[in-house]
Amino acid sequence: MPQRLNDIVRFRGDRLFNGAVSISWFGTDESKTKAASEAFVFHGPKYHGVQQEDVGTGHGHLLMDTASLARTVVRRCYGL
Image (cartoon, rainbow, N blue to C red; front, side):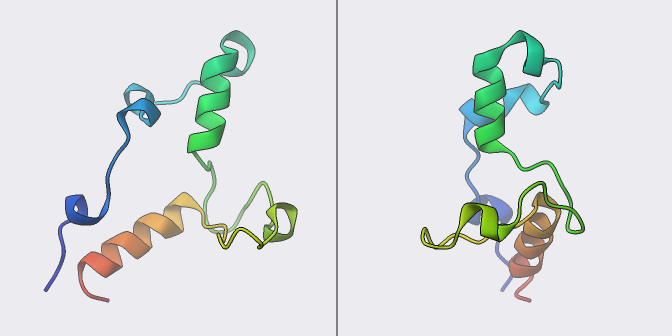
């Protein structure tokens, strides 16, 4: 039975940035820049700004770009 996305994903309001992140924050708002950099990965499946080796594996988390994550979530919602 397919699951609903809101049954498996919870969005944190403090990480939504009103639906957008502005590159201008890099030079104008250090706190927003830091918050956005900790919340988002800005790349697709063919490009990573970092490699798994850069962040290690001891923490148990594997890098996944946002495009692949979205695809995985949708596929799991449909039982694939």
